[in-house]
Amino acid sequence: MDRLCLVDGYGAAEHMGALAFAAFVAAMTAGRLTGGALVARFGRAGVLRASAGLALCGVLVVAFSDAVAWALVGALLWGLGSAMGFPVGIAAAADDPARAAAGVSVISSLGYAAFLGGPPLLGLLGGLYGIQQAILIVCAALSVTFLAAGSTRQVTATADKGKPGGPR
Image 1 (cartoon, rainbow, N blue to C red):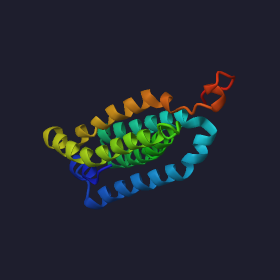
Image 2: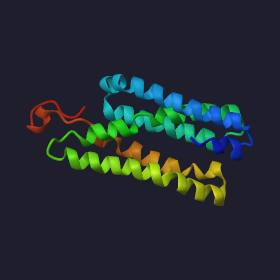
Image 3: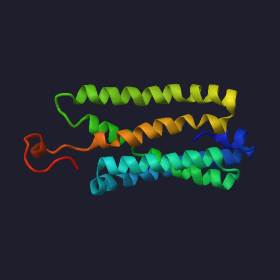
């Protein structure tokens, strides 16, 4: 969540942009603090799907609402929904001990690529189309996350041996 979205996109004061960013980060922190318990109860795939759905709703609210108050609500949803994507991805990548190092390195590389490449891409698109329209590119990534969430299911040792159990 970029403060520029509120300042440039909504014409809000600078302090409202800072408030939106603070709301995003606070919601993300709350999501990380409660995420472990949610994963234990609903499984990685369920939490990842719900997270992607919340983040998608948040992005759409920020992009299409016409009031700063709604944009703040969108920032909260976006932050809460963004909280568990990376931790769940790392956990799923580390499931197979034989390929854990490679899997974790791929997920980490994707995370760093998004961290380093996302802001310049959003800046370019924001300059061309406006910042509120530019953040819609995030919806594409969230859609892929939602669709791929099933691949994060933990396979139990008994399922690997063909015994009853299966993925959670």
